[in-house]
Image (cartoon, rainbow, N blue to C red; front, side, top):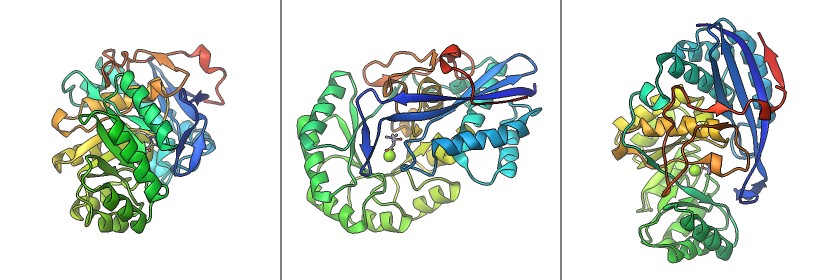
Length: 366
Ligand code: 0XW
Ligand code: MG
C-alpha cells in the first residue's frame, strides 16, 4: 500500500458554550487542519489537528497549514501502515514541529487500522472495558458563572470537571471553592493552571485550598518550579504542558512530581509517539489522560481509541471535543452517555467524514 495523493482542509469549529478562556486569553473556536491520504489500493485515511489559538501551545493553525504543505509531497509513495517508518521519515524530513506531524500520523493510523480490519482501539493493543470517563473544562470566569457552567455540565451527565485557574491565586481559590461547594462530593475536580502560575502564586492557592479534594494540574510551566510546588502540596499532581518528550516524562517521574500525565496528541507529535509515552506512563504506575488541544469527530475518535486501549486502572480521563464545538466533521462517534465516551467499532478511526462539508482543500499533492 502506497500513498498516492494527499489533501488538506481547513475547518473552523466555533465553541458551543461561547468563548473559551484560559491563561487570560479567549478563543471563539478551533481552526482545524484536516489531512486526507489516498492510497493506491483506493483506501482513504483521515487525520486532524486543531490548536487553541496561537497562545496555548507552540502549535498555531497557519503553522500547521504551512507544515503539512511542506511534508505531504515528501510522503508520496510511502507505506502508511508502517507507522514507525513514517514517523522516522517525518522526523528526518522536518525538525520538531510535532503538531504538523500529528494529523499526518493520525491519517496513517486510520489507514493501518482499516488495512488490518480493526478499530484503532483493538489495533493499538486492545479495548479495555467499554467506556472511558470524560471531563468538561470550565473556562475562567466569575465564580458565579463558573458554578452555573459546572451545574450545566452535571445536568448533561458529566461527573468530572476541570476548573481553569492560573490567574490571581486568591480569585482562583474563590473559583475552586465555589465550584467545590456547588457540586456533589463524588464529582472529581481538577484545578488546571495550564502552567500559568509562578511558584509563589501556586503555593498561595494550594495553602488557601487546604485539604479540599481536587487534583492539581500543571501549576507552573517548568519542571523545577513544579517540583518546588510539589514539595508543599499534598494533592495529587498531573503534568500536561511540560511533558512533550520521553525525557520530560522520565525526568518528572524521577523528581517524584507526578501522579498522572496528560498526553496531547498534537503536542507530542501524534498517536505513535503518544502511544509510546502512554505505555511508559502506565509502566511507571501513573494515571494517563489521552487528549489533544482541540478538533471535532476525527480528533475525538483518535483520542478515544488510545484511551480505550489504556488499562482501566491506569486511566484518568479524556475529552469529547466533538461536543465542545458546533460543527462535526464526520459520523461514527457513539453518543456520550453518563459522562462517559466509547470508541467507534468500525475499522481505523471509524469515522465517515463529511467530505463535501469540508469544502475545497487548501492544499493538494500527488
Ligand atoms: C482543556 N484543553 C484540552 C482544551 C484546550 O486545548 C486547553 C486544554 C487544557 O488542558 O487546558
Ligand atoms: Mg491541562
